[in-house]
Image 1: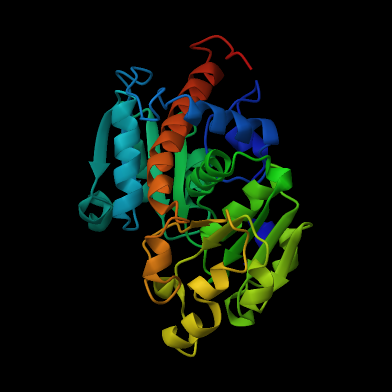
Image 2: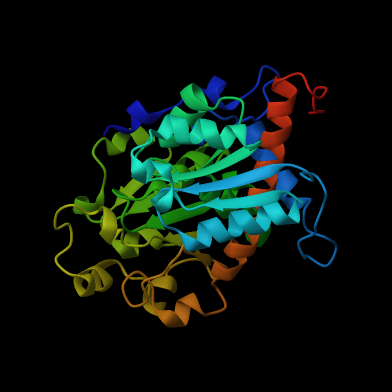
Length: 338
């Protein structure tokens, strides 16, 4: 599917005051909105750089609706909701009434009737979270935890928070390389969109042609394609390596994993071509020895574990802001200060 076909109008995600009420995709959101998410996430760290617990969502109910497995994402959303003092329900969709013939609409309406305030939705179909927010449960704050090959906006924002915290530089000053399976990666799409919105002017996509999406030019200005790993990472400030999405590859796109590592795996020799203070990121789970060598994943340049912590803070921010935006939209609270 062409990338442009998946763009969602910002009005679906924003309330009448321009504040977040759903978080479905990065596209269509302003730099101010993304910065507010980052600033709110940062506020959930204390002076010792530890995550805090706050009663912001006390009495609210967050339902994790994962139609597609992802222990890491679901767990961090659960941790985020609990740090906001919310009630959390993890719905086993595989054993829900949808497996007995009930429609998705009816299942969601029944869950909404159980006083759900926020749905965290992960689905294998692109656009599923948008469909729920726009046509099924618009009064419930919908957070997209990954939909097909389309978007993974909270992963992109935790990546942006990690970059901001680790580099201490403005995005306009950074060169960022994204390496690997761009074609099947919703993380890559969301990362590129977030970097562009936040002002990054040097985004390098490094991949073989077989792992590039149709309509690559839709990524827009500031994004350059490299087929050669060494050229792409030269003098970079940030390297994001992507997991090979074996479960989403419907036909052979790689000669072999060993061949991919030979051409595109991040090893010490290649990392040496980047800037001395370049940070290394990975959305996980990692395929060690395929996308990245263990000595780098566990080494001093790696901020992969910091991404996990930052992910909780970002998901706290998104849950809190979307809940506030929904209440404001429904006239239950006054406008939130900018």
